[in-house]
Image 1 (cartoon, rainbow, N blue to C red):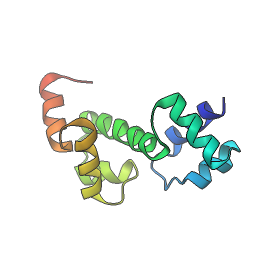
Image 2: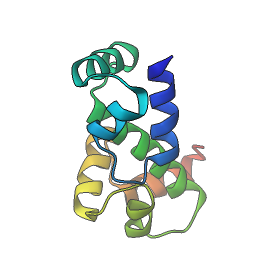
Image 3: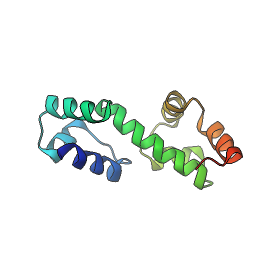
Image 4: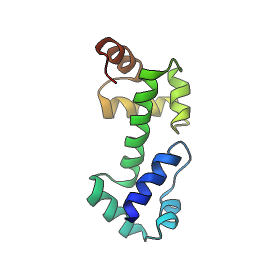
Length: 109
């Protein structure tokens, strides 16, 4: 239940500067308990889970808006556009611009 609350909280606040300490306070779990339970539930670490949520939001924005890559990066919580692009490519296999073009061409939604 607490991990579901945490996931909902991350979904709502993904664009903010999220911290492990803030998450621990939000769900009233210790550092090790939160990490262990999140990893068991999602298969991802805290940081990986946040990145996954942010990249999924970015993918939707890239396909459904004409926002620039920089604007998408900022709107999903990345302050550094270069880091966003590297993370996006690592998780999707394409740069944000490539993803937008390929997604529009193949009607991925």
